[in-house]
Amino acid sequence: MTATQLHIGDRVGIKDGADFLHWSRFGVITGIADDREASGGSAVTFDVREDGEPAAVHMVSSLLVGLGQPGQEGAPGAWSAQAFPTDGDRPGAMMYFENTADVLEFVVEFVDLRLDEKLKVQGPAWTEEERTRLLDAGVEVGHDGDAGSCPVSLVDELAKLADLRRQGLLSETEFQAAKTRLLSS
Image (tube, rainbow, N blue to C red; front, side, top):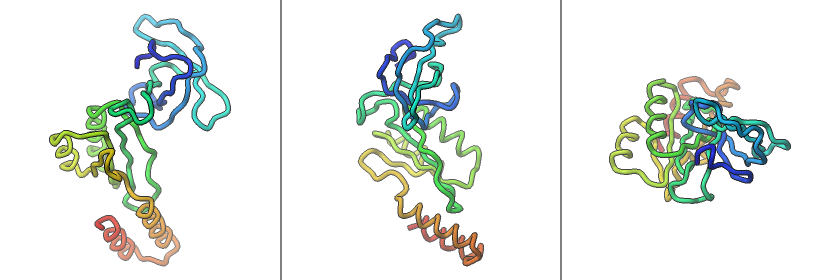
């Protein structure tokens, strides 16, 4: 959906910046704050109430992604990614994408950063070429029929190990060995 296709009551994804390929927050359009068009394109401003927030705020249309019905195959947001730090810290926010191409572009940028994190992606379906590209980049790939994301128990176990290391109950060597065992199982 483009900005001109958004309406009051529509559920939207909220980007942190107009140039982001993904969003991690959601909300509902409650009104149109300013429907004037800018000369370079759409600059419609909507009132959006973010999930969990009591009041709506003004948001420029370039920050909003119109979402389809929940569970709709291939709808914007059906593709997601999440980074899991390998040092046992909490996982990053779930990021949602409009399509496979955006996920693949994000994966390239993520891999280029060479972070000490494992990226896991989820989508409604992957072609064999897309799955191969993702696996070659060291990304864990899931589809809607898979669990597809890091099990909570694994995240909890990594967090426990990190706490034990911080408390001095595990040496760095013991921590790394235990972490490697967890991540390889």
